[in-house]
Length: 307
Image 1 (cartoon, rainbow, N blue to C red):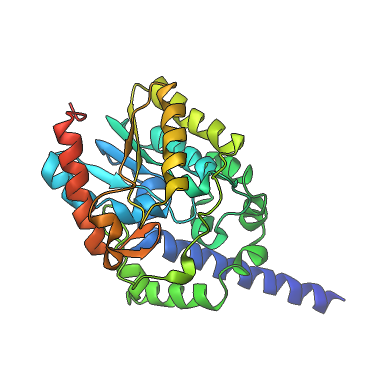
Image 2: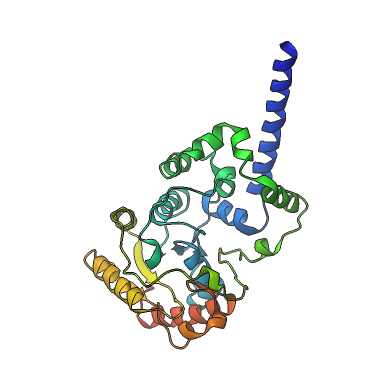
């Protein structure tokens, strides 16, 4: 019996060491999504403007170009898969961790306001869940965050072979293609051909779940509380139809009653009709994001939104 307990204890120690090694290496990754999360969660650097939202903002806004043209410091904090609740919690952390910015740009996922967050990418966030406030907030979305934090065996199961491969690449400074698509300022450079398999159903009328509207309100409230200017956007969509147009009008009216400006870029001619500029219906490729960023920058400078 003592041998069994000894083996179990040794196994737990080994697992804990491996878990610590994974988290340490990922937290100190010099590139990729972990470097981006490190900047958001762990650094205290000042940025004039934060771009927040999902992968749509992540792929649409070339923050290096924005910084060059506006002479302001931008960071793209869009996170793949993030819905309004996760976006709010990250913004809350940004306001607590970093010097307060002048501006926040919230890019709204028209097609993603129907559903709510129920799961988080454990592998992605696990190295940073030692931050108790963020861990507590994220556990409101996904209770597995707590299990992953307190039980190394549970956490390591999410890494799998892909995570192990990423760990080894990071350890030996051999970035993969996905890793190198991230800018130091947070933007994700997509180079993939158009994926028609990712074409979502837009034939039904979009429904805005009250839960998502509640967290959009929370984003508005926290920006007002800290006297930070909030501007909402809808980035380009490939061949937007009437349902998308109606949804943009609906959310625009909703935000207008909250005294929040929404800049609608869902349809830009000819960009929105050039398939070679998109990786799927809702995500721009690098060439499309560069074109859009110039258009976006021209618009906000012409409207004198950055004072």
